[in-house]
Image 1: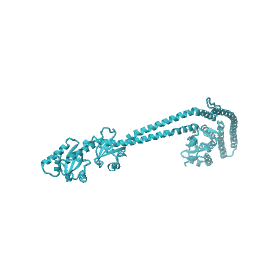
Image 2 (image 1 turned 90 degrees about the vertical axis):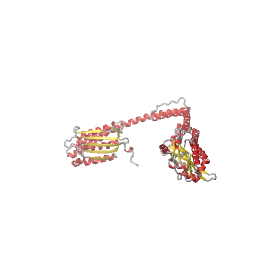
Image 3 (image 1 turned 120 degrees about the vertical axis):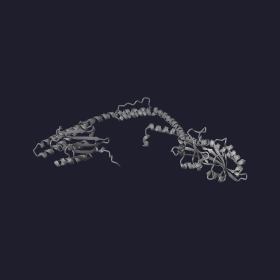
Image 4 (image 1 turned 135 degrees about the vertical axis):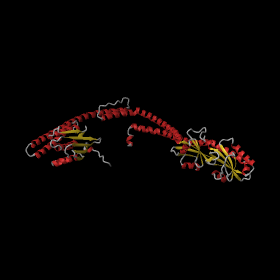
Length: 582
């Protein structure tokens, strides 16, 4: 198949030019794909930078918290209070130190000094009722590690709002831990997350604690929850040290996530952008570059093909058209080869000379064929006449007194011979002497059979609905005899005692030549006919034989009436395609 595809000269030239242009085009596409991958890496690096940018406010707030805690843990009044001093003045001085430490900074909701039992020793507001925090996880972490820590989501009974706690240990001058200082950071002051200048407008920023709980987000809490990655990917961010990943959000949207850890992996700023927003522009640029390269290649190929056409294929196509016209019988076709190369011009002259000789030969063959068609037409005419003579002789013999059954047998034989004669008449009247027009033939056959039966058209009406198509003589003969037997049988037996009725002959043919012939009468029915006259046995035998000759399948139904269906193919036997399943 491939070899035949490249047989035309034009296709070979196209292949040659395609090969020549393939190398630079392929290199350009390879470079474009490399640039696309480089831009994807740059975009991922930018995601990490955006995550760090989105964390600026929180990072600065935690640094500020560290500075406040350091100043408090070295304050003499705080150290005196944590040692357990009962002096009211020292207690008031400690409270005042905490109050002054956070007063300039609205993000802090409170500041408390706890001893190692979790009991508050002094606080920014003595009027507030502060609970014991010995059971808090952040307090246990400070006691265990001796280092600063940040809590997760907390609901403050004193402030009646959500906070996170920045806590650090308090050491005495001898290096022994005496308690802890806690700063309560209001989450409401972190709600502006994701509004830093320089962030993409479609970026969503969420602050989560080490347990994956959302603290604040640039989206609503419901939307932020659905846009987080699945549990496995979230676990990789919180504990697997994975800071950049592609994953589907819980809402099914593919996103690129970048995380920035704060406070010794206590908090995480998670920035996400829909993957389509990052990838689609880069992919579109890649497709544009590839498209431009393809267009340049196509333009180059078209220019090369145009040049080849003007020099070569233009003339070869003219010769091909002239040869095709001659192959269709137009041997006087002239090809205009003025300006063509001498080799092609000489080839055209040789083709013209050969066409002239073929035209003379074709004229001789047409004359021979005309004479043979005249002879064949004469043969069909004589066969028809001879059959009519046989019919006339049978008619004479039928008049000799030999009984009704003998006379009926002669009449039936005459009808069958007349059907054959009708086929030959339609054959010699056709143009090609091989096929007949089925619709007029069937109408003529029905009229012939009704006239021969002696049943008037007023008493029994015959309706013929046959499509306009042509059928070969080999198929028309058994069809005519089959129709003759069925129709004669209906006319003779289906309408006794001057009964009125109708007979419908219908045929449907599909594109494959499969025909469905139906002969339907509203008479007394096939079973009643068989009981009334045993002579139908021979007709049934002939009907089955003619159906088999057609290669068809037949079935008979009734009463009421009688319906005969025959399925067969109208094409000659050698042209019928086997459509049975493999």
